[in-house]
Amino acid sequence: MDLYAGFDLGGTYLKYGVIDTQGRVLQDETVNTPDSVEELFVLLETVWDTIWSGHRSNIKGVGFGFPGIFHSREQRIIQSPNCPQIDGYALVPSLEKFINVPFFLDNEANYAAYGEHKIGAGKGAQSLVLLTIGTGIGTGIILNGQLWQGSCGFAGELGHVTVNPKGEKCRCGNRGCLETEVSSQKIVNCYKQFRKSEEDLAAEEIARRALNGDEAALQTYSQVGSYLGIGLSIIINLLNPEKILLGGGVMESGECLLPAAFEEAKRRSYAASYDCCLIEQTELGNKAGFIGAALWARDQITKPRS
Ligand SMILES: [Zn+2]
Image (tube, rainbow, N blue to C red):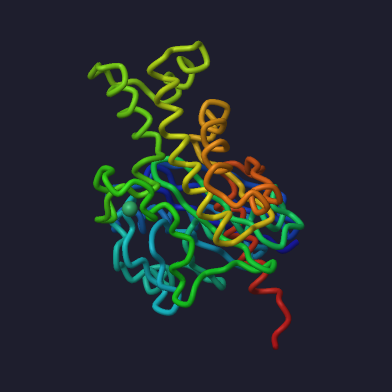
């Protein structure tokens, strides 16, 4: 039985797993992301050894999803705001030392969009945009049934599109990016501001308070949601996609965030384009990245040669 492995590196966690040719998950693991790139590659080698010894020669290929601006021709991350330890690092030579099957690299949100398109909430859609909203915002785009990577691989960086010119400084160097205005940290900061308190609460607690009618929490989700709505309207007016899929940790509080987001998106989009776009939650959840990476490896290896 042919199997494929996938890796999804985030600023906080490294997720990885093994799937069969149908995309069924046979192994699913999460570990903390190491602080240095050297430690990261030691970890990747250790993990690979366990995958290889567990499934032997059935593993036919691997996909590695990395966060940040991935240069497809040079096969390296140019800039990763949420995982700066991999900036500019020569990923391919480091992986070649221990990966003994064909492997593929890309931005992790691209792979997540590919996974949802192949076997998740985007199955059958010819055009979709996926947003994963957590510490940062990842974006992947499917157009005409294909992953749209851009001319150099840099497409799908909606997280770093300006939605508030006077907003806070982003880790990418810009100011008021969608990612700075709609993230778990923004929810925490915004709530402190509205509540006039320095107490740090987790975003999940703030969501609970919003559902219980806490005024400052409601104001927080109204503000953060409306910035998300601006982001959605940009996607809708630019691409007129069949679907927008929303995932990531912040979407666990979707019922707090989405009413303001939908209202703002509707207000700022062409009505015709808004009305024919389905906005849904992802199906594969936080597994989408590694599943999509493994499916990408499967499809690259098994596609007919032209
Ligand atoms: Zn940015």
